[in-house]
Length: 109
Image 1 (cartoon, rainbow, N blue to C red):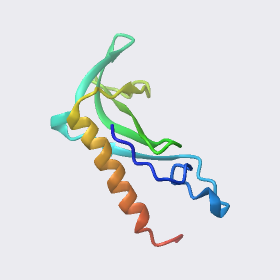
Image 2: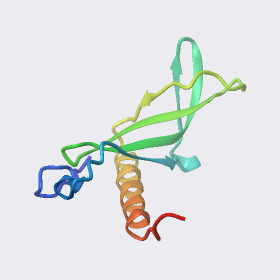
Image 3: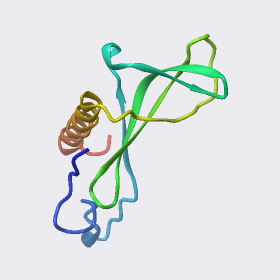
């Protein structure tokens, strides 16, 4: 997945202004046509959400989360995101959408 780095070396945290941002993460819904299943400890999960993180070096990382196919709440377990171009595009699009939303914030309520 392509990185979204700036040249400051601080991952875009703006640390030079005295504010240290230590984590940036957003949840992105996986459209139905891109969802997949994976198995952990004998239980099959339908993966429906990506957690996308901006790493300190400016690159993106993602994990997938979902619900047991058999129903119920199940455990909150992360799964790797398969290396598929359409999922890489979703990760990047989610990060870009989140950046636009953050940039348009209206301050504290």
